[in-house]
Structures are given as C-alpha cells and as structure tokens.
Length: 297
Image (tube, rainbow, N blue to C red):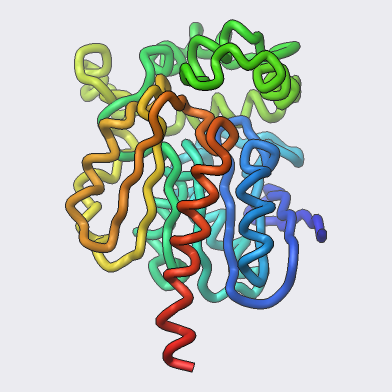
C-alpha cells in the first residue's frame, strides 16, 4: 500500500494505492467519508485489477479545508482529474458512492478521455431527490449548526437515516459505522463548503422547498446524461435509501450501456450494508470490461 499527498491548486488530496500497472480503478468516497466506507469494494477490486486508488477530497484527509469558492462539483471533478493525471493514469474505471458518484459523473462529462467505465453507488447529481435534511444544510445559519464537527455519529441517526431494514437492528454493524465518524474540523468545514458551493442560483431557490431534489439544481447533470451513452456504467442502489432516493436510478435506465440493480431492504450505506451483493455486481461488471481487450490481444 502506498499513501501520498498530491497537491492541486494549493490543496492536498490523499491518494491510497494498492498494486501497480493497468487496469486502474479509482474510488471516490461520499461526503465526509473515507476509504473505510468502501473497504469491502477495495478488497474485492484489488484481487481483480492491476491498481486500485482511493482519492480523498481536499480537507477530508489533509489540510487545508476546502473553501466555498473552490468546492463546486465541476472543480472537485477537475481536482480528481488532475490527481489522476499526476499518477500517470491514462484511463480508469471510476467508482463513486453518494458525493463520490456525483463527482464521477461530472468527471465523465468533462474528461471522457479518462473514463473507461463508471460504477455509481447511490450517486448525487442526478437532479431529483435528496433527503429533506439536505434542504436545511443549504440554509446558512442552520447548515452551519448541522454541519459542525460532531463528537460522534449516533446510532439512532444511523438507524433512522442511513441504514435499511435489513441491518437496522444489527448493533455490531451500527457500532462499526459509528466508529467511522470524524470529529475533524477541516472535514466538517469542507463538507459544508461543498453543500453551500453547489446551491442553485437565488431565484431558483424558490423551488427548493417544493420540488423534490430542488436543492440539486445547482449541480445536477440530468439534462446531460445522453452524453454518457457510450460509457459502460453500473448503477447500484438500496430501495430504502433515505438520503438519495432509488427512484433516481430510473433516469439512467434508458441507456443501452447502463445496467441498474436495486437491493431490497438496504439504505444509503449500500457498500457496507450489502457488501457481498455489491461486490458480486462490481466484480462481474469489471470482468466484462476486460473481455474486449482480452479478445483483441
């Protein structure tokens, strides 16, 4: 395992790499998360791919924290692209969960040259639904209070918002998730900057509280999904996701290069809640990407 800090525009992004050579896979965790939230996928992918890289966004692992002016989805995608360039990676499969999925979508639209394929796990940026509490995050004073560093993540919060019925009463699992919480001020400030930097323009905020997903108007890519028609894409979701509703998955079903699977009884923490189910789909998908190359060889 190799851990390094890659500098882009005055920010440091932590990159953790296993293996060497191609094919490459880049994993992007969700908001305020790190590689632990994708640990089962990292282990599975390492057995199948040449190099596996986990990229932590600015402020999530290294100081300084993200500033609001730099925290748009388009900028986050640019940072990730710049890191991948510095790693010497020409093409990779990008796997993103939640925020990471949204960043992967933006990267695929802005830097299609880098993207061999996409694995999107309950991704943001499709433009329909985020949990109602996200609306509160967008209100400056309320959002500042809700997105402040917390001493710990409570088990009731995990049970009610993040985990589906299949694991809701699994205390060992819930306690493990609680240990993933961070008290880092830089991580909290960076998360807040991302939320605030990607709000819609002031006049579009009029629909914020009446349209499901209205708060995504500032970073949604729904009207550009047709541009990804030739990108092999795997979409995985939990049908009890209370953060980003699985109904958003239907926006991607119309593309012949996209396959969508929804796990029953699973919430937003799908990569950990249903690790075996998730890994089975990812392993098969990554294997299918290699077949044309093997035949050509």
